[in-house]
Image (cartoon, rainbow, N blue to C red):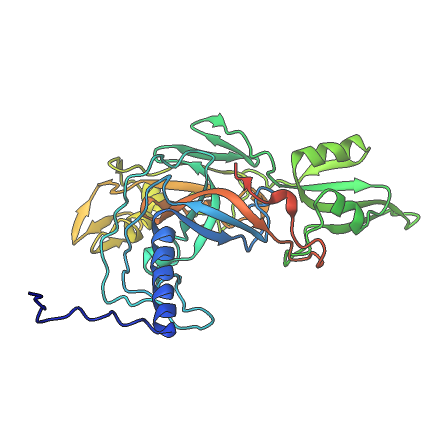
Length: 377
């Protein structure tokens, strides 16, 4: 005898085209968000501070795995956004919930010479993980003593090897005018800068009032400067004198006569290291103590420090810090101007360029083909 079940299996209802499309979009967003958070994130270079190592218009991938992925401090945000919702001025996050930031294990640590993406620490009005993304070369790691002498970086008293394509300012004198085509040949004429890095300078004979030389101020590499010398040109590095204090240089104190070309010595804070709070150390590290160590209440009057109402004569750093500089040394807003990068602001390591577009290129030569899939060193 045939026995029939009481509840016959009902055929599954086929999803509508809209539902299938929506499910695909949700899956893609979730997958992209996880990849972007855990593994790789794409960035573009908008400014010339890392030229010629990285050019304006380079698109690169940044590895989160090298140094370890950070857990989000502000979890309530629109996926795949940073600060603003695309095409609007509307915040893409809510700061109702703020979580402690942790870092998952990575397979490397930030090393001297690494090209690093990090959150710009000086944007204190934003959560740490949503501050603007900067890219620079790591010059000093925790505990290092950083010094710049006539543009040459020294780490712990030893000269650091300069990046191969590092740019420096020079003044070049010739007996003939040089046109744009000449400078383009050596990748010097940079029309993308707000202030062009080639300036004609005319020297006149005081009696005849005739032009005797033409000078140009350029940002270029040491190799190109040497080539100019071999052509018979007079080449002079443009370097600020030691002791010529700049008010915009960190730590912005009259105690130090530092400038962008002659800076330090300055020790990079290291987690667990204790310092005496002398007048000089307060000037050097007050920004760290006030803004990046998560102290509840800090009062500094220049010579004394109080934390939670208690006067302290020593301070132990709670996290590691780094000193960053751009390869275009004379055109880079970096740690010489705004100080140290906290460990919890490190985003990842720049690994390779996957696309490069010349903003000034025509339709036929817009893509810089030689830079595609170029490893970053």
